[in-house]
Image (cartoon, rainbow over all chains, first blue to last red; front, side, top):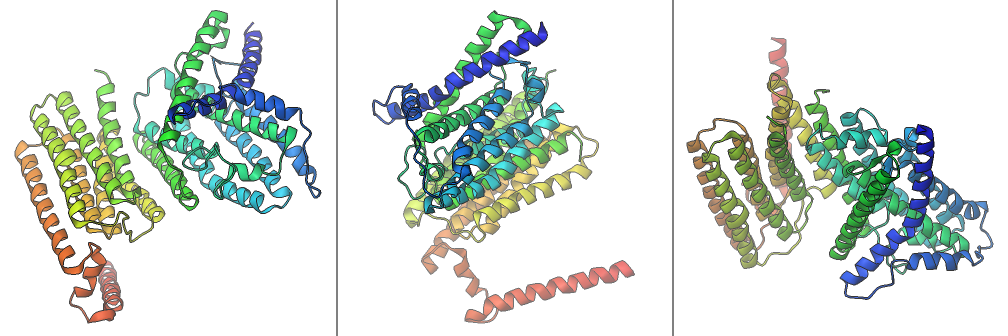
Length: 319
Length: 249
């Protein structure tokens, strides 16, 4: 019974995240447009875009190697696997024992490697430049994420996402300075990893300072659809991850039956809508940072994460 | 007795520390002043919360003073100063932002290392609170060192004092007289510092304190930098030698 419930919730979770991913991107764009006084495309516009792009044949450069062809599939699959590990409406899903934060970080890194290789494969200037920037930013973002995970692990005694969420939910820990610092670090990493506003401008591909779009300039048709879908999945993954760790309230247990799942789903939708709104407000309010200041921004995130871990070492008496 | 009141006091201390880092991170004088005003407000909240938690009504007075002086008056005065001086908006930093942030974390680590052994018997949360307050103090000092703009240095000094007040309100049984005299002292310091900023500006047409260094009276003109550094090195070496000798004896 338990395993059946786990499998069922896992399948529902996968279907839910696949459906929700384009909508998250669409909603963010729509909200941003409304806030800037435009009407904006409807929130389901990314679904239409994907459907259109999927019908088109990719055009590859003459010197494109196997990497260009394989990379979009690798990136989508790894991101989807990572997303399958991040709980949405229910905890204790079939893959929950595997849902380790370090594994999620590793899968995201694998997707990034695929993206960077695809950017460099054809050898155009923009692709290589974008790849170089992406890698140099992630050299700061990934350690920041790992150190933040370290402080969760000190508090919860595990890096398993379900256990971390359960520890934070039962309120025994209270309010922790370290958690606040780690949350800020995670937010900065999330913005950088999704190529969102202060780091990269998601609304354009005509800028010399672009990062994410620069690597996709050579892809077209089906491949472009996959890349866009991967970006949508990654945005959803980060929002779900932040919701799972910092807002772990209202999530249902896998064995609790359909009614509890429905309530969990409702809670998850509210959380995701809130985070999407927050992202849209933040992006509308802030200007893009100059590229060479991004390492400073992410370095500050890394230092905050380190600070969080250091304070935890003091308060838990490990030092 | 719940843990929550302590947690909130602790969180406010953490917010102060975070704002100290924001002060270090900002480049523009205007943003530095804003961050300082927010820090003053958080300090007032922290003091008011301690008054509520410890049941000491005098601390409400401290909170009021902190709010009026640190969050309203001093930022307003700094802004007026900025307007009158017609400053460039960018802060000249003596160290890069990244380097000063790293130095900031090192300073926090130092504070933790200092606090840990001397508070071995205290509760974990109290130790962490003290470490936070000491970090705010040291970060204020760091800001005074790494900024060359006189206004930022004044903000660094004020932020240092915020850390002192944070430590004071956290310790139960701090006499009111001490706090009042500290607050008065800070206002005096602020007035003197403001006066100095205007004087520096009048003499050198800039509030960059580097302009002062050629007037220190050691050597003339361009030679000061090399000589000053040389003196410093020799002094250190002498001290080290003495220390070594004492150790052998």
